[in-house]
Length: 232
Image (tube, rainbow, N blue to C red; front, side, top):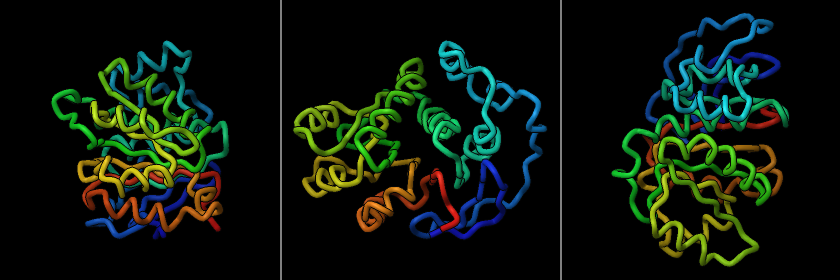
C-alpha cells in the first residue's frame, strides 16, 4: 500500500508515505530540480560515488536513463521511493546504485553470518539472477558481497553463503521465507529493502509472504519499490 506525495508521468516517481507497512515518518516533502530530459546527465553529475561511476563506465554506462535521473537524488539521500519503469528502462541500476552506495562503507567489519544489511525481493529465479549480476558488478569494486536465494535448487549452497556472511541478499520470497522459518537468515540488520516487479509478485500471490518478510526488517530502514505498473 502506498500513499503518494507526488507523481511524475512517464518514468514515474512517487515518494512513499508507507511501503508495505507504515514507516516511522513521511519522507521529506521537497521537489528536486531536475535537468531537462533531452540533455545527457552523467552518473557523476547525480552524485553517484566515484567507484560506482567507474564500475558503470567499465560497462559502457556513462549517461543516466530517465528513471535513474529521477530517482537517484532521493534514493542516495536515504528516502523511500516508488518508481515505475518498463523492462529495459534501467530500473535495476536505479535501485542497485543506492543499495550498494549505502552499504559500501566498511562493509567487511559490519558483515555478520546470516544477517544481511541489504535485501532485494523479486518474483522469479531468472530475475533474481539478473539483479544479482548488476549488483555484483557495482559491489565487487567496493567489497560488497552478494548472494541469491530462490527455490527449485538445493538450499545447501544458500545456507553456506549466508553462514559465511553476505551484505546483500537477492531473493525470491518463497525460499527466503522458508530459510527465515528455519532460523538460517535473520533480517533484523537490514538497512535498505528493494521490491522489484511488485505488481508481478502480487499477481503470483506472493503479497502475504512479502508482507511477512517486510515485517521482519527494521522499521527505520529505507524502502524502494520498483515496478512496470503502479496505478492498479
